[in-house]
Image (cartoon, rainbow, N blue to C red; front, side):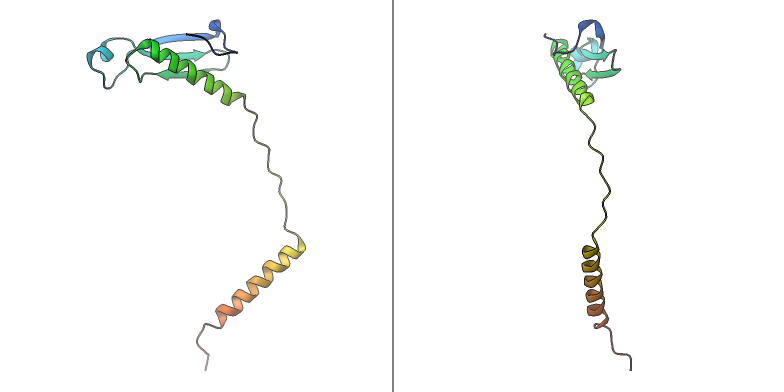
Length: 111
């Protein structure tokens, strides 16, 4: 089992827990679930899907690497507010007037 780059063994805390669910006595009586804590970042991941502790360790390491990569991503750029141009406002108001005129012609005449 190889650690992903940027993760030190001394920064990890491994815990082995009993996993519940399907898998019978082998899964219910043995500690095959893995909880992995990364101390510097405070990220905790858990893997209990497999009946093998070795496979669950690999899954937990992959999840930790993914979580750290997600945390390292830069935040999205903030959006800048823009306002419509004068001609865009004029066009929008003209289309509204036209639409209102069309709808007013649908009404019954007032006799």
